[in-house]
Length: 322
Image 1: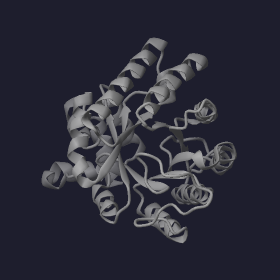
Image 2 (image 1 turned 30 degrees about the vertical axis):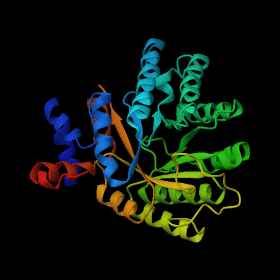
Image 3 (image 1 turned 135 degrees about the vertical axis):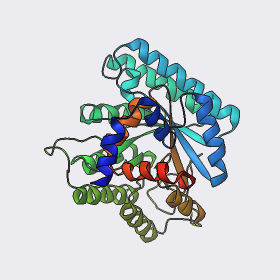
């Protein structure tokens, strides 16, 4: 209740205060800001996935902006020799406005990224585009572009079936980020209780690992992390082990031995550093862009537990280490 109260107060604060809070979770407004943050965190054995803030758009002109900006991101990664890949929102490339042109935009970026052996993650948005996003990944693989995967949300009822369907199409080249999911979907299609969402997410992680996929375990929930560590141990996966699953693909550039842990910038830094110290590959989600305010407000609304972190940062700024 205290955390929710702090969030409610923060949402009523001036824009400058929200910006102060967001410094922990958003790299900044510009690509240069994002590069500086990644260069700093490289010392903690982190790798990265970069997201240009913004999603559903109203015109294809806006889609052109995102395509051009992501090309700039790709070039910056190469120039600065940063261990990073790309995360994109399919709707930001026009998928809901013009499906054909939207796909062409995504294909263009993925094709350019493949020339640099760079992976592109299609973020999963709300249920309106779940099927379409998965289909984009399958179509790109059909074109020989295997440097692309998507996100699957544990909270959706359909996720285990999606894992099975994608595995039947892609086999060992399947590559997922498994997370709980941030979109509040209706109970007809999604789990709504914390307990059920956690269990469904654990089931999706285990199923993906068992089926041989590459799995980005994206959670700050200690219970999910512990479950994942136990699942990896059962499969004889983890630090010091190669990926010995008979149904898995080979070693992929910029990837771990069949899995990695992924966390948001500014969230659970101590846990991420602990996992990295143990030898696990850890990836930090780096968002940046002019839409930092909209992103910050959405994060606060979707995850009220951030409220206590806001209070701690304000009262004990020396402890505000992401």
